[in-house]
Every structure is written in C-alpha cells, then in structure tokens.
Length: 281
Image (cartoon, helix red, strand yellow):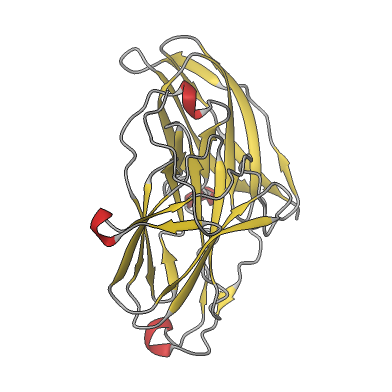
C-alpha cells in the first residue's frame, strides 16, 4: 500500500494552491483519468513486427530484469518544422525541426516510454517519489518526454525572457483531453512547484503552450509503479526488479504510436524484449 497521501479537494476545478508558508505546493486534484498510454497524436500507418519470442536468461542479483531496444523499420515520417514569428529573443529566428522523433544509428528510436501494464498503486511497495522538472528554454519544453511517479512534485520553470502560458491536459485513448492546469509563467527565472495527483493507472499528460507557440509540446507519463524507462540514444532500455509472472510491456512514442508484448519471468530470470515500429513505404 502506498503511503503517498491522497490529494486534498480543490476549491476550483483542477488545482488548489496552498499557502506560501507550506512550500507553495499546488495539487492537481481533478478526477483521476484512468487510461493506458495509448494516445497517438500524429500517427503513421504501423504494424508490430513480432519475429522472435523474448529471450529468457538469468537475472541480476536474484531480481527479474527486462531489457531490449526499439528501432524504426521503414521510412521516417515527416517531422514538423519550427518557424518562430515573434519573441525572437527567446525563440530565435531560424527554422528548425521539432524533436518529436529522434533517431540514432540503425534507426534506433530515442525517448520511447517503456512501461509495464497493471499494478495498481496499492500493490506496489512505497518509495520516495522524486520531483520532475519541466523547463521552458528557447521556446521549447525541456525535457520533451519524461516519466513521473504518481503523487510526485512537478517543478514548472521558465528560463525564457518571455511570457509562456502553460496548459497541462490528461489524455484519453480517443485523443480527448481534460485540462488539469493552465498557468502563466511570466518571466525568466520563474519557478513553481505542483503535486501530481495519485493516478492509480498509467496516465499520459500532455503539456502545451497556450499563447501562440504551437510547436511547444511535452509529455509526462505518470505511473503508479517504478517499472518504466525511456530509451536512450541507442534505443535501449532496462527495467530492474521486475516481479515474476507474465508481464505485459508497452512501448509508447508520440509520433510512432504504441506496441505491446508479453513476457513471462520466473524468479530471477532476465528477458530481452525488442520492439520494431514499422512504417509503410
């Protein structure tokens, strides 16, 4: 059973701001949105390549381990271009591609969210929920993709010398959204801390600009358990201390979509699970 305290009821929809002397924490307290991370906002035609069964070997230190890599098979989809038309001191003047799809050697895919399905919060041993930080630099959210634990602090910052309006939405599997927070971050050096709600299922938050910088997007995967990771520049990931049994593992990417596989772990076994997003030529 988690020892994370349930958020207090908000006096207005979405957010309750606490007094300054109580560390200026605000709590996202809207009704929990219980969804899998199956949101695909810019989706190309995909099929899952399932060629080999997961490879099972011995684990680490008596614990189950799932590792693997994610790559793209086929041509990369077109990526939108940023072309600032105002706020040049902060946003720059040159056109540049968004970072919505970052590929490495052999089309390894970076920043794919890998996570296990299931495991309600009450079934997971409690542990410290580290704060996640979302900054605004050069008119982009940094980092663009990250993972947070349910109930963790969210530190919202602005490093740009310009007003940014930030909106945070909880997304559903049909691309509908529910706004949790809309706030102005008016100056460089602005910083404020909020607390994520105790989402009891994997939930995807989309962060967008609400005042003209339409290319500004970020995603925060909020999970009630620790079994999640982002792929690195080589498309690789590792999940440690995975419980035994049959696990459903998901791979989510903002452009490429979602893939799922199942793997069975017995005790200290380790499994290698690779994913391939396939695009049509």
